[in-house]
Length: 255
Image 1 (tube, rainbow, N blue to C red):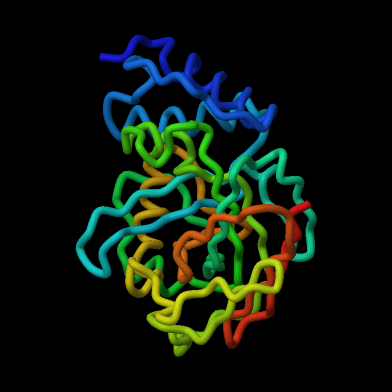
Image 2: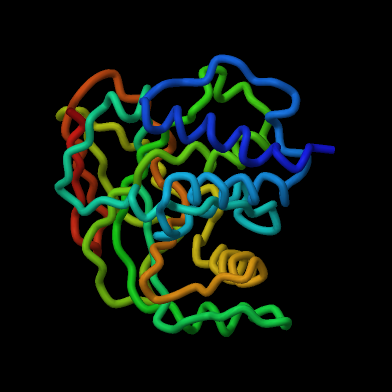
């Protein structure tokens, strides 16, 4: 089992790497969380050491139905508005993903009984495009233990949040028309599908996971739901332009 000092120990190394824009080259056995609960505790410790609050969640699944769901806390100081500029030095080897983010229209507070799918899904209030900047803190990524990647905020670097519009239940979540370019190059694959299928099915997991850890899910939290464009490894500075038909367009410049 991990020692009680484990979360703070590896969390400090991760936070230092975040602040310095560096990769950790050494992974000791004691750095790897013992289980999912330890990995999520590591996420919370990272936010505490960053002296920031929860701005949202990233959530995903590799299967359109019935597959495992996991997620990561999003530091509030890592959320940026569309049109922002980010320095590449802060996000070594940044990867871009175009996603759909959702907000709920009511607060979900901790309670003993889990929230039902109907309670959560009937409370979707707004939606918008998002671009996630993925940047692991480990040089060996993606060849690291999955629990370590989970603890490292699922390799989250930053989230660019587009303008939100009222939720439309008829929106084609399974296969929206979209485009994503970087440095004037088309980087969106042809299918434009989310591996989780309809990403709305992930929301009850977020609400119940967060509230069971004693935290409230508020209408301000941004919940981004997985990439429709895979993972694009950038090779230098450039402007990313994303568009999902029916949502306001979004952009971020890496400088």
